Image (cartoon, rainbow over all chains, first blue to last red):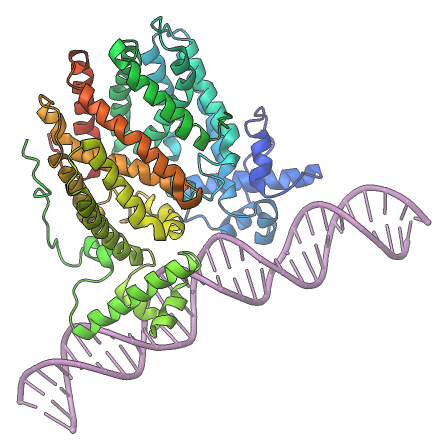
Amino acid sequence: MSDGVESASDRNEPESGGPAAELAGGRAQPKTDKSEATRALILETAMRLFQERGYEKTTMRAIAAEAGVSVGNAYYYFSAKEFLIQGFYDRMTYDHAADARRRMAGTKDFAERLEIALVSWLDTAAPYHEFAAQFFRTAADPTSSLSPFSNESHPARATAVELFREVLQGSELAPKLDAELVELLPDVLWLHLMVVVLYWVFDRTDDTERTREFVRRSTPMAARLINLSRYRIFRPIVRDAKGLIQDFILPTIGKTAVK
Amino acid sequence: MSDGVESASDRNEPESGGPAAELAGGRAQPKTDKSEATRALILETAMRLFQERGYEKTTMRAIAAEAGVSVGNAYYYFSAKEFLIQGFYDRMTYDHAADARRRMAGTKDFAERLEIALVSWLDTAAPYHEFAAQFFRTAADPTSSLSPFSNESHPARATAVELFREVLQGSELAPKLDAELVELLPDVLWLHLMVVVLYWVFDRTDDTERTREFVRRSTPMAARLINLSRYRIFRPIVRDAKGLIQDFILPTIGKTAVK
DNA sequence: GAGCAGTTTTGAACGCGTTCGAAACTGTGG
DNA sequence: CCACAGTTTCGAACGCGTTCAAAACTGCTC
């Protein structure tokens, strides 16, 4: 049987993916402890194999065999292979937020805090760079629940946006910034992260050094841009930008812009 | 600098037998007329079925059967199902450029010309919205030759960038614009189109009305932004932006900006 | 024609994700 | 202990994209 069964019992993570996990699993409710254990075993085994062999080279048959269950059983808990990713996705979001908070503590400069948050993501995601690129195509499917814009991703997205809110709140921002603009910034910064992720997925340099350089260069720019928005000539363009974000971006990413 | 068209990389044929040749279309050279006819027949049949049933519901067996050939034969000409898309992709790029040029003729205002070019794309692509979304996931794969950033997409990308160069050249731009910035604009505007495409793929409204509204709103903004770049306060941020684009964006999309 | 080298075509077979009917297990009430 | 309903597990089977060895065809020389 499976020799090195990862300790399926150390799931002490505090609800990294509570509600989302249910939606993603393709199953209603865990009825028994044994059932929950089987589910966890399959998930852990899958994640381990994904990291060892990559997403596409890990077959459902291999996951089932390694976990000591049948394929049918795996499908009983995860109605498709891609749903096995959601757990991974949720956990990474949680880990990133925790790590970024730790690193930001004590730093007051906005640009620095932003850079820390982004670099923290790169570090958190680094071990998965190879296979993340492989399932990026799944995430790009508009009809997939794994899309970062989908309803099913809402919890993870909210966690990330909340992190960027903290990035802002811990910063000494210039006074007299447009309050409405500041209100929108957490979501905009999350979009910035999405751009970085896009860049990262395509990055083939060692240790994704290119993406890291991209972050180092783009964060001070973002800070400068926000600062400049105080000037009068910016008034019209800032208003336009706000309108564009409110009317076209936020609704797409799940903020029900109730008018 | 001399940023002509795509004169930098005009490799008509790399090492024969190399992976690039295989990737391009799945086959090296058309030997006979009959061979070429078979290839065309398969491609046309595939495109028709894609539109009728969608990408994923169209099986290779169905394409072969409908075209009156064997599956193996289809694979002789197209080494994978996704390569059947490339022909479609190239044709659409060409049609778009032609249609946009026709529509722009006589218009001098930059914002208008830009909007025309983007709306033209939406109209050209409209018939394929449904199945385009289905193979968008394939295009999102960094390792796929169908990615808009891949080498194999270079010809189509060059055509599109060239179109945006014409959008600019036919416009009465404000004088005193930073020449280097203008030089970069065709590629930046192409990126704008990519963002619109991304929005479009996720758009589920009737006739993609939401994306159309997005274009109507974002193009005047782009024009205003470019105009504002003349002001002195913008000097540093414009320089930063140019650096960012030159060092991180253009290299990624195939402009070999070797330093 | 006959032989031959290259090109084109074929269809059975492979491995994959996924489905499904049925068996095995679990807990509860009689 | 036995039925019985619900939950969990099983593994054969299906349809798919893809591969491959062999057959069929083509143009050529003798």
